[in-house]
Structure formats: structure tokens, C-alpha cells
Image 1 (cartoon, rainbow, N blue to C red):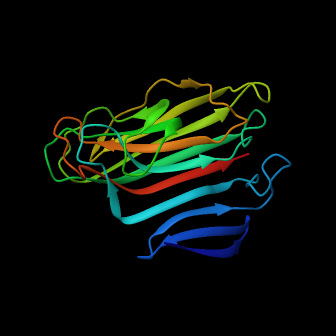
Image 2 (cartoon, one colour):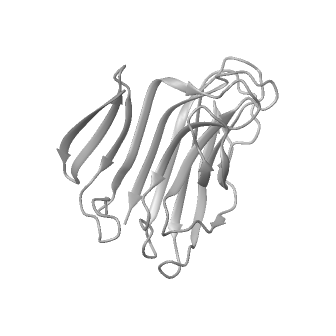
Length: 210
């Protein structure tokens, strides 16, 4: 069961969702909009902020488990220059197990706590053995080309595992259908041992930029 709260800000009304324990699950600014995506923020700001203080962990399996996900509204990327910035962060288990966290674009199966399916990988930590500490990963997706051409480019901004900065990867060309919802998903995995909660997600932030 969840609870909704609404408050006003400089970018308009913001709807916030909480679970029964008081953890903030999401928030969405609703100022602006267009004929195709009424109510969707156009002036720039957070499209979704999901916080679980205790953390949402990977399942007891070696597959990529969904920690957080967000459905970008259909036609949000309606003209060249629209941008989406994605940041995820959390805590690593106090083990020497192999761990991995990833950001995905356009997933087709993205139930929190279950294995992800579909989509294109836009940022990847690679296998890490960091024992405890924090992790974060981020990427930015920009719309280019004509409206409706299904052309996006993802730039991997950074991936950090504990005190290790993992550098950046080459940009990835994306072709998600811009007239449909685009699912943005972060996953964690215990890639060899399959130990639950080797990767805990605590923050997932999706910002939309004009």
C-alpha cells in the first residue's frame, strides 16, 4: 500500500509516493506538458526520485535483478535536444563476492526484485569485488535527429565502486520507440555466487532536461 502527497515548487506541483514504512518511492513534477504528454515536466527537473533508505537488493541468483525502474512517458523525446539524466546509487555487501551494477534503456521486463529482460545496456560497472562501501552509476541520454526518428545517444558519465572510479565507456546509440513508453532500469547482481543483497539500491534519480 502506498500514500501520495502533493506539494508546490518552482517547477509546479510535484506528486510524491511513499510506502507504508515512510520510504519515498517516487516523485514527479507535473508543470508544463504538451499535447502528446500532458502534465509531463518540460522546464527541466526531476521526473522521478525513488529512495529506499534500507535498500532494495539483488535476488539470490546470478542474473541481473531489477533494483529500480521508471517509465519515461511516450513522446517525451519529441524534438532534438531533449535529455534524460539517470543516477543510481547504493551500498555493496560486505563480501568479497563478484558484484555488478548496470543501467538499461528500453527494457521490456522490469519488475523490481526479478530478472530484467530486453533493453540496451547504457552503463555497466563490470565485475567488481569491492567489500562494502558505496556504489554509483550514471548516464545521460540525448535525443537527436528528426521527431519520431527513434534516435537517442547515451553517454556513460561515471561508474564508481567503493573508492574505485571505473572511468567511462564509449557513447551508445539507442533506437527506442519514442512514441511508446521507454523503461529506464537499474540492476544489481552477485554474478558468480548468487548471494542476495550483494548490491543494494538506495537511490534512483531520473531528471528531464529541455
